[in-house]
Length: 312
Length: 267
Image: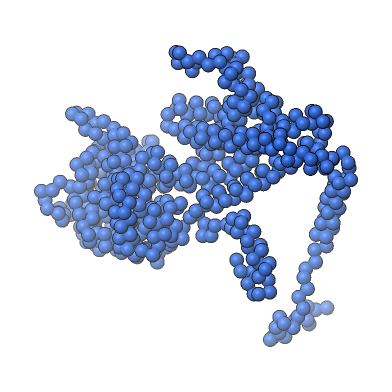
């Protein structure tokens, strides 16, 4: 039984042995269990006629649905642009030396993060009850709130201003993540505060800002479904209009869901490219892009056997 | 307190000093870091500031280009008060734009290089001359490439700072400061963050620069460099200048006991 007895002699080479891989029995058990659940769900989805997959296929490219996607994308882009722009301003205000400016920005963030977006949307939608006439305090200017605050305008205001509060925190964290020496070096070179911010600090902060902003973007895409309560015909409301007529509730919700997944997936890929762009100079080798990974995937497979496999 | 070993006058005596510190004081909260610094630096002179950490030498250097605001005394660079505009009997604090304009004459090299990591080496050099001095791109590019050649990094023009060794990064930082064509160069412990084997290449570049007649104030722990290159060595302790004079005198034959204690600890 002594292990010393089986000690191989000096000069033994690996070639004399057969390598026996470690066994992982629990991997098989867990894999089988999960696979069984997935198969059951799939079978149920396919066999239950109430899923109405034929209806899903029928309405998948319905003109109203496609228009709804258009409005969803429009809202996402406009509200994010407003959110990012205003968010940068708020972040700079929060880092300001002026106490009034700083406190105002903090109050903004507290109010807009502290109340539900749905409530904010309803507030903007009912702005005309608060201010029937919008004058901006300028004599001669008098705008009818009911005409200006259309459902779409209320949606943009509600989602954009809410997003700005979240973006300002993201941008502030990004700015604060940059080493103080960067600002000092820029200052010592005679660069102004604006130049330092836009040329030195923000481009570096982007590396910290982009990933959560990508998440915010995808979150915004889904959040736009809230404006269905304002009867803005975005993707969800377009589906609701159709199912309120034909009562095919589940198939149309599936249509909307599948489209949401498709669009968010496309954006996630784009986010990868953006992150790569702003990672310039920060690592010795930048991570591969989605396209490069795809190319590599096919390259490796076609190169198998020709000795190139495994080269990155 | 101050012991003037000799009066060094490397440049013509009728010229006013490029840097004049008169009773410069600076506090951080209750902690007075500079307790009245008087120092003249002539044009073309190389002055090394030595002393233990906490003696105020880096703080003084940072006051010279207004990275720190002084609380007392006056600091003059090229006959302009640092941080103030003088009108009659009033000192008006400078606006940020005025401070920036004055800084363009003063190059600074930091302990941790502080290169811009998102720009290539060449972009690091060209950024301020293009954006601050608004010079022509072709001219700036030529000058930047010329400077990179002088610091021995021509082939790294398109590399990002992260791809360079510490010594290479610091040489780029020196070139970046020189690309602004400053009248005065400040070095804040330029070799303290470097691996020992990389110190030499940076000191060599600084030695070459000193030979061109550049006015330099160098905060350093490299006594060999101070002895070889400095026209004058200034020893600081507790926010005051304790002893100053030619390098040979201060380092080779210190008069003050604190200087002797410090030198015996570092040499």
